[in-house]
Each structure stands twice: as C-alpha cells, then as structure tokens.
Amino acid sequence: MASKLDKDILSAARSGDFTLIFSSVPSPEILSELGYLTGRYNNLTALERLFTLGLTTPPESENNPIFHGALESESIPIFQALLNNGFNLNNHWSESLGDGLVVAAMRGNIPLARFLLENGQDPNNGSSSGDREAIIWAMVGDFPSLEFIKLMLRYGFKTQGTGAAIAAAELGNLEALKLFVEADRDLDLEEKIIWHAVGD
Picture 1 (cartoon, rainbow, N blue to C red):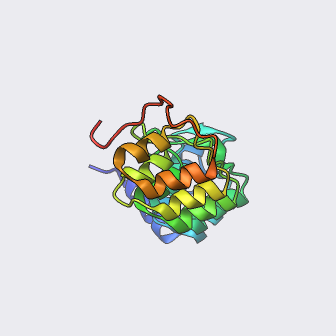
Picture 2 (tube, rainbow, N blue to C red):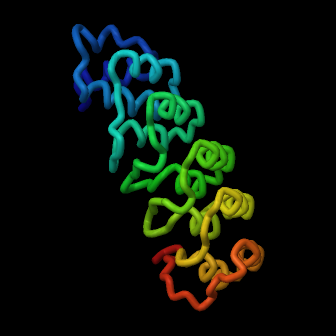
C-alpha cells in the first residue's frame, strides 16, 4: 500500500503544487522522484518549477529517473526543459528503454526523433533496448519507418558495422537496404555484425 508521502508526491507531480511536500529544503531524493513523475505525466510547468527549486541532472547517467520520465512521456517540451537545464542527450541511457532515439523508433515517434537529432543527439552513439539500436527498431518494431531511417541518415548515421544493412537484407526490406547502400557506396554487405530479430 502506498504511503501518504508517496500519494502526496504523486499528487504534487500532477498538480504542480509542492506545498504539501516541501516544508523546508527539499531532499534530492524527493526532487528526483518529482522530476520523474512530472516528466512522465508531461507536466512541463511543474518540472520547470522543480528546476528552480534545486532539481538537477547529473552530467551522465544510467537509469536516471528524470530521464526515464522524459522517455516515458515522449514529450518534446519535457525534453526541451531538460536541455534548457544543461542536459546532454548523448550522456544518458536507460537499461530498459535505451535512449531517446530508441524510444522514438520503437513507438514510431518521428517528431521526437527529429527534435532529438536537431538538438544534438548523435545517431552513431546509440544505446540499445533489448539488444536492438534505434535503426534496427525502425525495421523490426511495431512501427517500421523508412522516414525514420532517412532521418537518421540525414543526420549522419553510419551504417557500416551496425548490422543494419544485413538486417534489412535478411528482412527483405529492399527500400531500407537501398537507402543504406545509397548513403554509403563503400558499404561492406559481407559484414558479420549480429543483429537480433524479433523474439531473439
């Protein structure tokens, strides 16, 4: 059963009214939990207020709750708030979700992918989810997207050594394979990089 504090934190994250939580200087743990929840519930005003109250993000992290909240919401304004407060998109990773580009590929969120790439996310510095990087999810996930692949290539994705061309060939995705070959005329189609099919 959730404690009263847990209920108060959830209520504060949704409403943006932190008076029940902060009787004095807020603890880093409570700020972090509120940062996660305000991101998850896409409460931009509350998240921005938390930053004025002392919420910070580390220079790099694995499984940071504030980053998780942004990933779960897929909210461009939430990601923008993180960027406005010094967040580097290339230095954070989620063990369960990967990075922002992976989430965008898995969920077919092209506007989020475009925003992340426009704001410095390196398409070649990806983190994976379930052993699949974003480019693979764009072919084997629930929302296959040539538009996503084109976007990644436009922002400098390098196919060589990723297994993406092999995945496209094995899946019979000739359109994706053509995009990879056109982007890199020296692409070695004999590369032996392992990619993981759905269910692997």
